[in-house]
Image 1 (cartoon, rainbow, N blue to C red):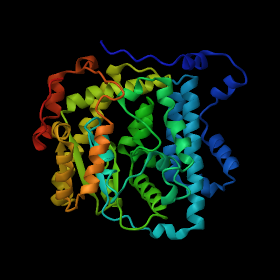
Image 2: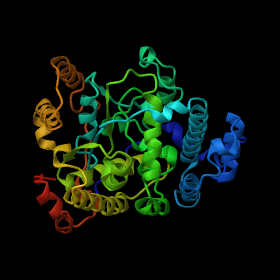
Image 3: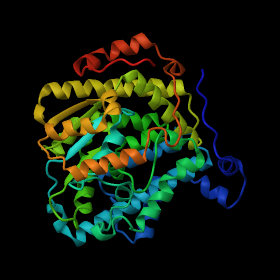
Length: 419
């Protein structure tokens, strides 16, 4: 096998292996749901209702996640610390959201109209397309810090200087501090556009968790659970974020994981428009498996890339099947779909954006296009290094995967790449 994990920073090995009481005891704490909920109530002065303790939809995902973290993830002390920190922040934000809604119930009347969802397989250009659309002042794109800490609603005048940006930056840069090579694979920043799975995580029903940790029990539950509670919480977060924003801007959201849950998405957002990116799924699997194995490595949860590849193959074969079936079912009018090929986007991204706007009946103003071109010029491909990966490292049968994905490639005319 040719793939090897990138080098972890020296501090992770010291912290993960060291014996440093009382720090060691803190890092070895169990993932106990009731204990963590009690600590969150103490930190926030919140009631059981505000913490969500009595909400069965919340407790189902929360309890399953913590069980998998404790019994399946095999995290070292660095990974355990990170997981505890992440869960604590999510619980704190849930309490803040509940309190905000109680104090300003009118937020529930905020309208989310005709949102655009960018989706497609991972590593197919969804992030850069989302980032380009964010350059249009007519679009409202959630940033990392807003999805991580949405309360109180951002003020338009201080949105770019809010002190929560620094908090988000510190949190999301953890992976890069542990494995510096991560920047070449997937750039992160507190002010960059953020995926919807970060809002879904607040409902504890999210691919965000399965992308970070090897937790097969939780992943199996997530693959078949009702995702409407996650989308309803996602909608609530958007309502809060736009509470102090002048009306008229359209939301543009993004996540590859939407392919797995299109029915739930449209149940909550019946007037959604979908922009789908397409790329040879074998290339997708090679790049994605390398990314996830690297993330597991960063959290002290080393994974065999071949195991990761098998899991991701099953997941994304399911996702492409669901996309095909959902598209053919006609729940969304064809005029509310836009498809683009990765190769076309890499060749002329602005042309693809123009086509997307035309499909959805939108005007691409000259100033917005100029901003998009400036964004591209400032971020050339490979700016942070090159992500190298090979399909042959995955231990998969190339012909078998081609056969499983033939209907998807034929339905959406996805070209085959040399990989």
